[in-house]
Image 1 (cartoon, one colour):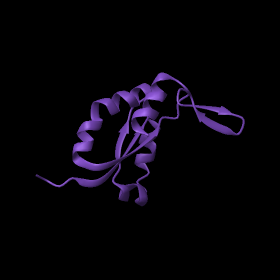
Image 2 (cartoon, rainbow, N blue to C red):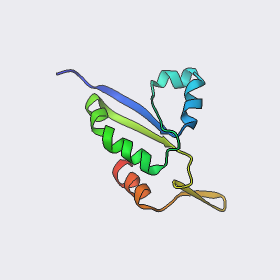
Image 3 (spheres, rainbow, N blue to C red):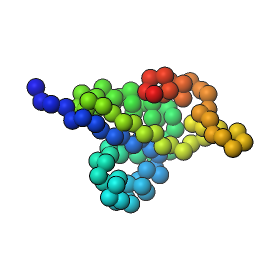
Length: 99
């Protein structure tokens, strides 16, 4: 049985992730991120990707560090000086299952 790698960071983003990926900054390259950039991604797209891929990814790695950067209105609401996760079924599922 082959040994699993210790940690795999995964960045799930809308198309803005492609710009960050192209920066080719040493610190980003050293992280060996798995880039998942979905054009127009909202929470439901992130949830769908996780549902379809999380088991396969966890077989290969002991720990997954998942970063979600969609920047869409269905993820957060600004109230005064603070930003809060927007309540909703998909956001609740993401928080419940993956945080």
